[in-house]
Length: 264
Image 1 (cartoon, rainbow, N blue to C red):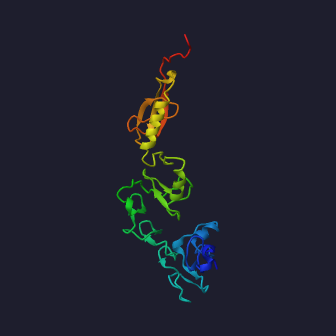
Image 2: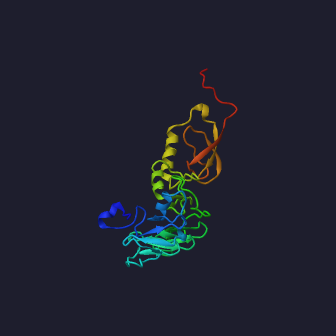
Image 3: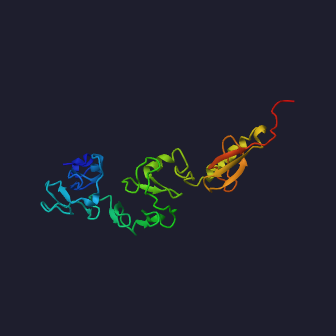
């Protein structure tokens, strides 16, 4: 019997992925596993969860058709059971609901309660960002830009950055410790006004040598997505349209006549 070792003293059944009182018999290979993730981690193929027909009660070890109750001993398989996904969840701290639009079960209280389904992004999002998030078609049907795991069916929490791109929440927390740019589109992840003001002051303290004062950089701003010309600098370049320093130098214009640094 597979018991979660973290809570073995409380006799709580399940695996490291889910808390439940049943195992599943995979329709594809007829083998018994605590959950679909355990199956996929120990097999050379992926399970189709909706095709699961049988479950094994972890209390009486009876193999039987799927359901919310064991027909042999009367044990409740889990607090939550979805007969579409063949998914069980007995963790009271992780409420679960089924989204017909996504076609899978997701963690949360439900559509219209704490989540809403965006039809353009084709994903469930926190209801708090319903009217403010930037839509990107089929947004999370892609890999996390940091760890590479497919986000749509990931069991790890996913957030949507201000630019609209998705990322795993733990990956985002690590990212912002060393970068202020979205790893997909390079837009700023937050209000950078204070930081950019510091860069402006830094440029004032470090004027360019005479030989470079007439050099002009053609830049692309990752925030406003516009090109502009600005004074060349060794370190930073400010967008002349939105004042962002989140820019990329495309090329540098060097004047035909450059003042000589040789003493006369």
